[in-house]
Length: 341
Ligand SMILES: [Fe+2]
Ligand SMILES: [Fe+2]
Image (cartoon, protein in one colour):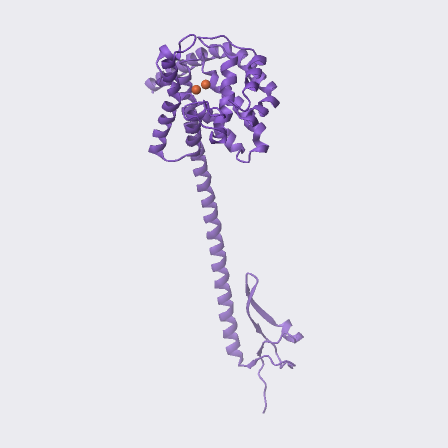
């Protein structure tokens, strides 16, 4: 008797019947294989392979494929879950590193600004000179940004902090020279001019210990070059034009404007208008032409910064005393609490 097997495995997508009984084995959109179960022979009109096997074999094969599919799915889900957990953990780690780095940078920046202010107290009343220089430098750099691709927001932030280091070398200048009222003799002037080299050398020694750093490099350029003039008549290296770093060219103008418009122990303050005219006279000789043009476009902002600084000058003095008192009171109460505990 010619009996046909009850079950057929066929790779024949053309058969409607086969489609209706197909078991597809797939993972992540990738078709791994298929088992076609039919209760009768299906006529094939294509030359794809067909296999006639007994019922038990197909059952065993189906179970094996199901187990395989299930195992693959479990493995896939487990690995996906592991990958997600790993990604989440990596992100948390990156966030923590970023937070720690930014925290350290903030501490470093505050410390640098504080130490630079300490040096600045020697020949200015309040150390406000550095705050104003930072504001002026930001105004100029922002104005120059469209013309100078090197200037980015990060560059400007760096410039504002690094500008506070411009006169850090003055700590090495004796009082009789630094605070002398009136003109300096040639010998005294030579001593005074050394503050650029002292500042540069101090920052270079830090760099030698800790390695290269964008902020430190800019600080060194500014300390060394803020008294250079674009026509080569400045000091200490008589650099010309763009051989002077852009940061130093900006700080040079900000520094001169502030020095002219504020009183020192040895001189009175000059008017805003008079300072403008001196700076404009120095366009292309003392100062970079682009920087002077930027100054011309932002004179009002300079005036506002200067005004604001003068108005808050006395308030700051009172604030300093009040802040010191609050700090001591808080510290005393903390010590009392600690003793009681
Ligand atoms: Fe200086
Ligand atoms: Fe200065």
